[in-house]
Length: 400
Image (cartoon, rainbow, N blue to C red; front, side):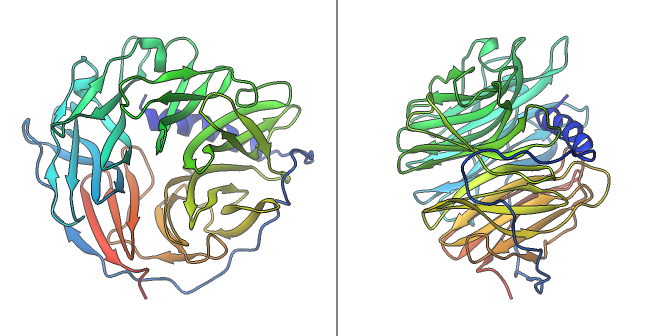
């Protein structure tokens, strides 16, 4: 079972439960979660320009693109290569201008590392760190590796004990974030939400599980999806399933060091709500996740977290999810899968209102498909894998 499928199966189970919601229970100390209605704004049509990705070494195969990041004048794209026999190997690309891309050397040490598909990339000071995984072993669980960039520019696999990311308490490893103090991974263990912290070298990640405030407790069961660096440390987002309830409420956690955490649960309604991605837009934390039958944004303001605009809606039988969220100034760019198809949305007011942007190709939701975004200045990039081909595009501004 792939890393994304582990997340999707858990989410589908929770969404099915949410269809039988009981009365809401108050929770947390944040502002109201009742957001604006979905606005029917005219769509955007960016002038997408296709970019060329060179083939990585190691033989022919289909390119897989999974995530993209940029910092300090350097861009990174990660994923893998799938051969005709179904085998995979890790792959990564880099650019100094976002236009001309070169293959980034990848050096794997372990049996599963050599088969990793790289799924989450973050960068600081023009250097990247990456999470990858490959399903394997007797139980068919994702075998997770982390990767760091060394002096010669190559990505090298970081050695870790099996139970750092796996073992009997493992549930999933989600997203990687970069910050001034180093790196943070969030995910989930049998005890609830968990974190992994590393120094700037990214040479070792220490697992933090069962942490008070972060992990599940008598209040409810926690689940973490994503994290971002702030001026005071780290901010993680996810949800809490309150005791006696069958639908999640959105939750955020703050930490000075990735080890000690303080939880804030946003007041939930009778619908299923959770935060799946978080970024800083103009220095203000904004999260996007599920809000009942739609996607919604939440923004941190001086008085606390408030619900911002809602957009999109569920279609098809798949599990809805926020695939990517990035910011440039006050603008937000989100890629979501509504259960039937992927779509891209843009907000120019920190999540208050949203407009759908046309993609260069249609992408149905499903396994082995993905959409990822990054934005720098007035330009943004879109990486797409539709299950049969992968591509990278860029566009100026937000379109017209």
